[in-house]
Amino acid sequence: MTAQAPRSDQDLATPDIGDVDAYMQRLGQGAREAATRMRRVDTAAKNAALLAMAESLEQARSEVLAANARDLARGRESGLDSALLDRLALDDTRLDAMLDGLAQVASLPDPVGEIDGLRSRPSGIQVGQMRVPLGVIGIIYESRPNVTLEAASLCLKSGNAAILRGGSEARETNAAIASCIRAGLARACLPEGAVQVVATTDRAAVGHLISMPEYVDVIIPRGGKSLIERITREARVPVIKHLDGVCHVYIEASADRDKALAIAVNAKTHRYGTCNTMETLLVDASLADALLPTLAVAYGEHDVELRGCERTRAILGDVTAASEADWHTEYLAPVLAIRVVDGIEEAMAHIERYGSRHTDAIVTEHYGLARRFLAEVDSSSVMVNASTRFADGFEYGLGAEIGISTDRLHARGPVGLEGLTTRKYVVLGDGQVRR
Image (cartoon, rainbow, N blue to C red; front, side, top):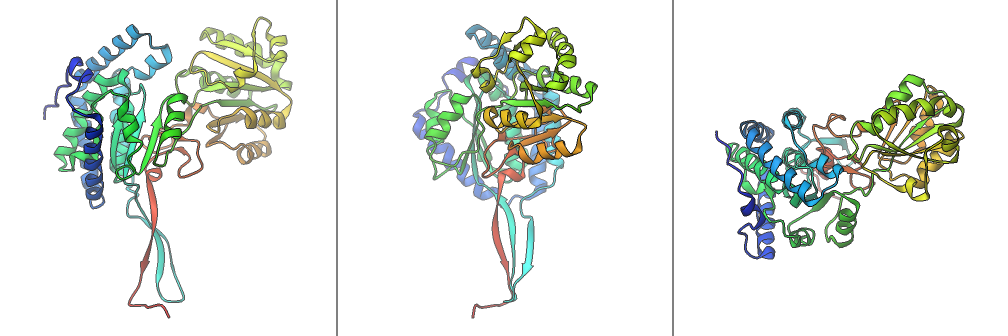
């Protein structure tokens, strides 16, 4: 099978879609019709589509990477910052990870149709709950073209229809990936409306997508704080979101030195432009004199700018003073705020005040304090002796993630297949009538 070649940059810049309102209505209608059909699609057909998408993407590898190179060149010319360029970039390694994600999602159990909690009632009926798709999911995201494939795979496997609206900075890459998705759906005889990628970069399309409750059941925004705040403020359908990734690592007094160094360096320097990157390091006062100089050297090797509290600056010397704003900031850059704290109470109080409920970690050899941290830190992911960079759907075994939710309803943390379903009550009887 030969994948469709991506359209030219000119075509993508001015797609022939006519009126944006009418165009988005057509997408919504197509998605709603597809969602109805997807309820009766079995697991084998969904898996066949995912594997066909992977085959199409592999065959179109060079075209996808070439499209991405053009997007990157345009991004550099327009002055995109390094964090956004990093999110935008694809290479063979990242493409391989996308293919692995498709295979993993195909191998995961299908949650749709599962019935649990079945119990008998005195009337003789049995009552349980069945997992069912949410319906039509609108996903709005920036920069990362891998989201196009991840979102498509998870929505498809969970029996939903999806309308995907990527950022204009990735328009050629997203168009190339969309061709592979369409090819996979066609080979598996699934409705084309099951996954639709919005073809226009007109920002009015977003306003329409979030204001169509007759067609769209939930919106999932992935991007910067301003985007997510706008979606949350203006959407007329439910939103699954997170605003910031102000993630912390707390090195507790009993921490193993080698573990602490490895985790603190990895959590900050593995990648800068991700929401699970550590932005603030908390170090127990009993370890600060011995540990901070070694950490400063390690961060210096990665050109990480340090901003510290007064006690940090007293130990390290020439370090920029951290302002109140620094404790609130998701840098998405090689910048780290450091604070010396007196024990776990102060560390947890700092996280409670400044954290974003995303991901926070403790490094400790004290079982009781580890349990306290797990129980009392109110974040979507809480870790013991592990890098915050593990807060990821792929690393959690979800295959991929649609995003990371810091909400409490309807899903929390990395949102995988189960997070894209809901439950309905089912009742099994044998002729019972209510007396």
